[in-house]
Length: 104
Image (tube, rainbow, N blue to C red; front, side, top):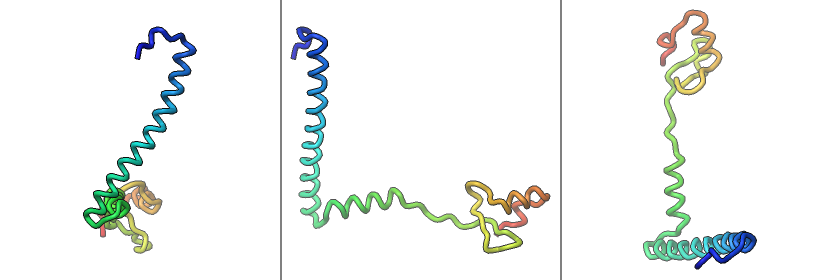
């Protein structure tokens, strides 16, 4: 397509038409690929939701971290040693205590 013969306004209009067509084609392509995925999943006895759910579940799952420190005044208050220190840890350190003294 030779664009050199179009004036500015025609190019702007063409750009708008191209953007609309790109959105339409993207939706068509998504539908086509989804159909292929559904067929491939069904051939193996799965649904796409089952397959995507397994992948998404593994991606977002985080392993719980064991607490490393306990508040001597209230052992139910614990801290993993990661992230922001609880106030009771700040207080302990400010009063000359050490993390080793409260390690679980």
